[in-house]
Image 1 (cartoon, rainbow, N blue to C red):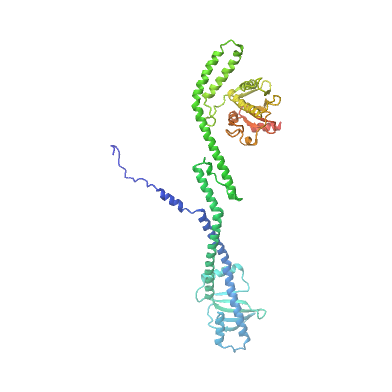
Image 2: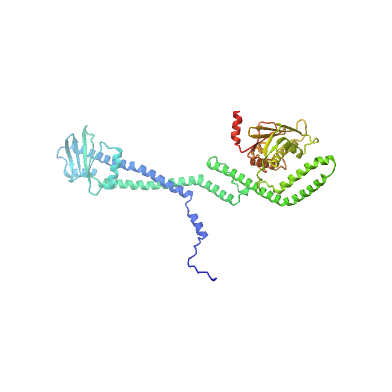
Length: 502
């Protein structure tokens, strides 16, 4: 132990073994278990809802059966002459119907037909002539809950022997309660059987229809998350026409887009690394070329004096590009240094940078408002126009046969209130549907062999840095790109509203 240190008696926090974590995860109730539990629960709730009216109806039927038996006994007893039925036979008749006494009532008169062991106290009177459903349910549960051994009830019901007569019997309540409990146990056992069978059927049906497909989707998502660039891990669609099939289709589309995006990001990162590596040597080469151009500017030749300044400006611009280490996707563009510049001279620089002289069979048509100016970064707007115009040149060259009368690049410029609109159009074959779907996206918008699609992507980034927008104008011959540069921070949506109301 080092001097100055004190021993600590606090135990270290116990580390949870990975095996215990795995066990805890395995012990979690899955979707199948939850479905099984909920199915059993809902079936039992349904059985309870069925049981409540069933037990009330069972009680009423049991009492009605006793009334029917008493009615038969009353017919026998009433048909015999008075005093001709021996007491022993009367007791046997009462025992057979489970009653202690049987009587007939007509109005206020009551005639006792047979009796045996009449109790001194009657716990409950039950009139079967008018029983509501809710009263039947309450009485049924009262019988099972409050009935005690030895309780006696009086049961009154209509007697079909004569109009206005009623039959009255006195009987023990214990047999009724016992029959209701037996019925309840049978219902409970039947409910358990039905719940188990139904739950298993629902469980297996949902397991094969939902749980297994969802488990497959979940496993695929976990595998794809571990290696999102592996296109072989994209989920294979099952072809189902339900919500699971739709989820598989959308997941597969999302995985394909994500894999493609990651692939493009890796390419961009590699491109940025490559540019940063060659930037130093390329800058030195351009610096040497700049020294040679300085020597050329001292020659008295008129042509040299004419082209040397332009060559020097081009070299200076190229050195500035290298100095900023432009790498699309790996480095952000510098904020534009906005100044008031004339549009027509800028377009002429673009014309010379593209090499569209007399020996190139492409007509260059400029239609710009006289004295049009724009508040923009000179070099960045130059790059925007060069990229868009070069795309137009390549579209015309890719068509094959060259016709100076047909192959044209037209640049127009105008001011619309607080913004300047520059349009670059060509008479080429236009933009394909595939290119429209990925317009202004690096490495995806180009359909030309060897093309990268970086030109329009860089142009869009630079225009957005100025607070403007670049878009493809629909419904034109060839392709027309509209570049909108605001003089100040204005809302382009409100500007469109002004144009529409004008």
